Length: 200
Image 1: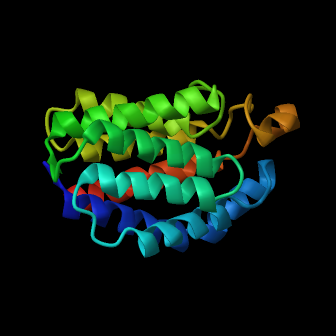
Image 2: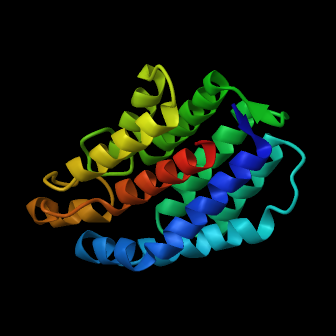
């Protein structure tokens, strides 16, 4: 069960992790992207925490989160993360808590949004390489699905290192994109680290 307060805590923990790892995320992105993933995510999540206030329902919370990210974050990460949270909120609805199945459904809706907007698939060296395994592990877990999801997201992140990017700015590098972790998959692992911390 995830309460509205726990979901706000999730976002706050994600903001804190992104700020803590901002330089690292930017370092990863400087190797295969625009060198702005860390700064973009930090700016976006700081704006989110400044804006959310005291939402009455989960859909209200995540509408604010999604719109803030779409309008304040440059590059691909703003629209992708923004779409993820907007779809999450729409599916969750005007409620103040979600059971594990409802939380899974909301996360899956977020994934569907990312798939529709990013037009990528697992193996393309994107955030999907962490996101898809995380949700598959969530649904397969008998207990503490958030811990299973975080572990799978971390494994998925690490698996991006040898991949050749097929989407986004990194794909311009061709074979030279191999040998680097994907920044989006890395921030997605932080998202699930934050969720596991909030729900533990």
